[in-house]
Length: 265
Image 1 (cartoon, one colour):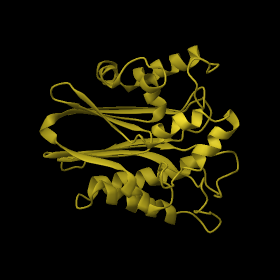
Image 2 (cartoon, helix red, strand yellow):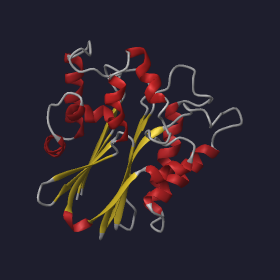
Image 3 (spheres, helix red, strand yellow):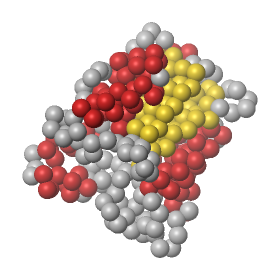
């Protein structure tokens, strides 16, 4: 088995709000991976005394432990329990009902000798390569479906429009303080014998395909397998630098935190 991972902040000296980790139980019968992308809030507008890196560290650690050790729980149950654990770590001065309480997108995959399970919530991505070389993207597309309507609004109203649809019916969902959101995730299960490789990507890494259109999902997996996650992120950074004004490729940030995890069976 080959496992490689990279996670870089968008700008040197700024906290990385992504999280990535892989667990391989001592019994050697399987494993789990978790990638989170923390949601950057407006300055001083979270209702919480904790920052996003604090939150993703607690949510990610709990989710990795549960998905790796509790095979009797579904990944949906693991995520719900991890959200509960992270919420309980907050203090009395944290308003967990605040729309911008610390939160994150989620990718988790778990495998053993018989199956590969997966869960995706919001706009991070999981790529599954089968033994024939076909690449299946596992995506939660709810936010993408809302963006065209947002583009029709005046620039000053776009962010508020999407913010009003966060964790709301008819909108999109991220992991914050409500464990019920776990039921909104995209989940699935594949035969282990059919899976050659997995790649989990935060949206800072998926920019190579989704924002800059430099290749499709199969090309992303090809870069990861041939050159490794660090090369994919380097390609993203080069594309970001070439469009520093964001005129050719509009995006919220010039550079974003970027995380990629590759698992080859």
